[in-house]
Image 1: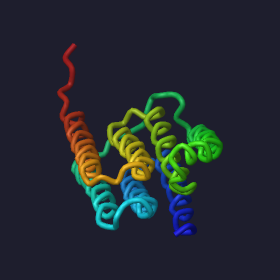
Image 2 (image 1 turned 30 degrees about the vertical axis):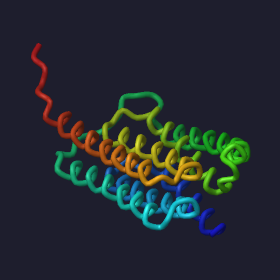
Image 3 (image 1 turned 120 degrees about the horizontal axis):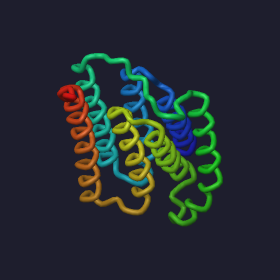
Image 4 (image 1 turned 90 degrees about the vertical axis):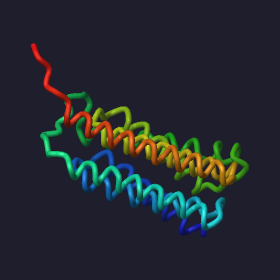
Length: 197
């Protein structure tokens, strides 16, 4: 399981950084779904197969909700007017998050009663890169993806401490609720009436 867990960490790193750089919403939805598959691999050491499967199916449902909603909306020129927005800056910031996670993983792993270095690193990467995603975007779809990424990282870390079915169910409801709220906000922003002067 050790090598597979580290492969999942590499997949998490690639998908999370790609979510920062991707401009096409279709690619970002696919990356989110792949990210949940890697999360499933990291959950297996601490959760039974059934509960870990519920998490990945929930993630895929969230990606499907966001994808179906976005596909029904008209395409618009989605240039964000926020600074900083360049891909080079995003890569630099992701590198900084990677350095912080590399330094913090051993300490957090000790605090988490040796959850596993790969599990801790994967969870911290998701939390860090998800927060970075939230900090550099204002688009509703991308903000929702950032929030789902942060919660996925939290779920990985928290599964090493608590494997209760009730907690898993609560986190499933939170994930689905976030996807539905993001979907609603995308539709509402598209149908907002123009302001009169």
